[in-house]
Image 1 (cartoon, rainbow, N blue to C red):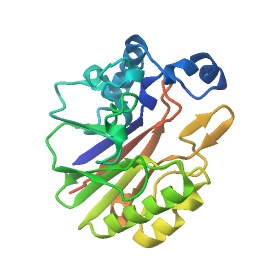
Image 2 (cartoon, helix red, strand yellow):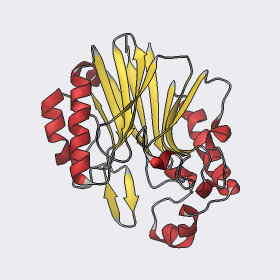
Image 3 (cartoon, helix red, strand yellow):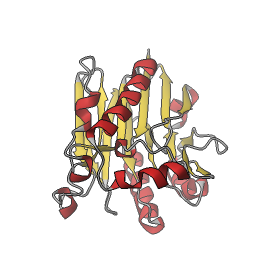
Length: 253
């Protein structure tokens, strides 16, 4: 048995790939992006999903229909009949006014799964972006995925909270997401010491590009037993400044 997980930071499907020329030419899409641009971007993501055929697709920065996305529900362009379970949730804290503010009310994270799986929507104790998904991949295997803060101090607090959650979760764990470790992978050292997790990313393979700057921001960490039977691939997304992560887990039960 095998479980394949896709993690994709869509960048709200603005079709900006990280080149400075793209940012200069399409800066206005951050303020207002047409449905046509988003549809074209999501068609490219659908092609990736068709090619990789993952069991679970996890999405960061997907829009349910905010003002800046012209009210376009991006999930509608990704909907597939062979994924029985679909869930999106606003990425801000449960009491945050950003959940209802017209510019940010659709900004979300979410997932699609081929078969129904138990899951929880949790919230980190610190930060503006606080949503954390927990999905049961197998009876003794939990997947967490999230999008951490750009602020270093907030991010450190979020990493400590993630460590506590992993430590109190029975069985094996996978932790994925856009970690925004802008100061490098050394930021993860307290988490790795706290939990014993193994980082599957290679330090020389970037997952984010801005002009000439290349960083490893989108990460996959696993408990040791899962790491031994897993393979992580980094797949370029020409429609985003982030690459996608493809995690193959052999015999996850």
